Each structure stands twice: as structure tokens, then as C-alpha cells.
Amino acid sequence: MSADQGVAAEPLLRVDDLRVDYRGVVAVGGVSLRVAEGQCVAVIGANGAGKTSLLRAVGGFVPAGAGSRVELAGVDLTRMPAHRRVRAGLGSVLENRHLFPHMTVRDNLELGAAAAPGRSGAGLRGALSLLPELEGLLDRRAATLSGGQQQFVAIGRALATEPRLLLLDEPTNGLAPRLVERVIEIVRHLRAAGTATLLVEQRLEVAVAITAEVHVLAHGRVVHSTDGDTADLARIAHSAYLS
Ligand SMILES: Nc1ncnc2c1ncn2[C@@H]1O[C@H](COP(=O)(O)OP(=O)(O)OP(=O)(O)O)[C@@H](O)[C@H]1O
Image (cartoon, rainbow, N blue to C red; front, side, top):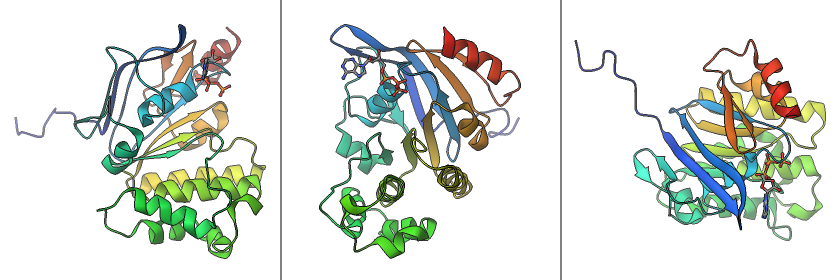
């Protein structure tokens, strides 16, 4: 057998037994998942299932509990602060976007590029080529933009860091249907360009429009994983959402 036969490629992101608790409230109760290079993996679940906590712990915005492990391209990120995870290749688009409201769109994007020094330097240009709708907004202050426009700036800022893997927290939340379609298109483009994505979504139809790799989260645990077969997903998600 040749060296590459029958040997699965190392995943880009490995999350093992991830736990998050908030002073005794268990939000994530031991989640393990993998994201391969260029793959998009979605985590869906009802309000309070633990999706945001999971994503934040991967990004380093809340601490992971004892025994948890988060690894990107073989580098242990588990106790690394968020800004160093960005340099290691993790870009994040969080809930509430966290833009700098009094800075221009250009400055917000440049901050993204500056957060990951030593990359190719093409981050800002790459973000703008994927998000041409930002070109006409570059001199506007972020605070003056609509919610949808701000969401694209948040995505652009994360892309300006030239991430190997993008964390997306409900990126279509509150967007008009046309913009939801646009976000779906952007994530598909990213995948085609080789950027991996870990997407958390409440809306099943958005997740399956992007990927067939879906984990269903309920009460902080993965209760179903599709492994590429989404046939029963609506029924499973429905029962998870109602349990
Ligand atoms: N800062 C916090 N302090 C205490 N409990 C929290 C905190 N953040 C979240 N929780 C609790 O952790 C659990 C998981 O919340 P989380 O926001 O991760 O779920 P979610 O699936 O993202 O929900 P939603 O779709 O509503 O955003 C919930 O029970 C929530 O009340």
C-alpha cells in the first residue's frame, strides 16, 4: 500500500471534548468535531443549545473547561488568547459584529489585516474582491451602516486576517432574504477558494444550503451528525429543537 492510500488527511481543526460552563451553568457539555482544510461544517440547534458558547470557546473568547482541546493545523490553541488564535489562522465573525462604530469601514478592515501581521498582505484586497459591495462604503463610519452592511464589514474584517478557518456565528441573523442568499454565496465561494468554515446556525435551511456536514446540538451536546447525508436532518433537527 502506498503511503497515501487509506490514510485520512489530518483535519485542520480538531475540537475534543469541549466544555464551557458559566459559573456552574453547563453551556457546552463535551463536544468533539473536526473540520478539514477547505471544508464547511455547520452546527445547528435551538436557542440556548450552546452554539455561540461552542464557537466562542474555539475562538478563545470564553475559556474552555478542563480536559477540552482545540487544535488548528496541529497547534494547540486551547489556552491561547484570542488575538494569537487570529495569527494562528482563525478568523471570527461573532454575534453583534463588534465593529468599531466611529471608525470608517476602511479602518475596520485594516484593523483586521493588522491583526494578523506576517501573512501575505493580500488580506484586505482579497476581502474586497470577495465583497465588492464594501467598495462604495469604505469612507463611511461603521455606525452609519445598516445591519446588513455591518455584517458584510464584519465578514470582510475577518477575511482581511487571511484565515485558514473562519468561525461564523449565525451570519444571516436579521438579514433580508436577498442578503441571506448573498451570505450563503460568500461562504460557498470561500469553500471553493480553500478557506474552511465552522458555521453555527439556528436556521436549518441556511446550513444545508451551504454544507452537507451538519452537527445537531441540543443541551450542549451533539445529538446527531449527518456525515454528508442530510436526508433525515429536518426530522432530527425538529425533535432536537423541541426537546
Ligand atoms: N455569559 C453567560 N452567563 C451565563 N450563562 C450563559 C452565558 N452565555 C450563555 N449562557 C447560557 O448558556 C447556554 C447556551 O447559550 P448559548 O448562547 O451558547 O446558546 P445558543 O445555542 O448560541 O443560543 P442562541 O441561538 O439563542 O444564541 C444557555 O443556557 C445560556 O443561557
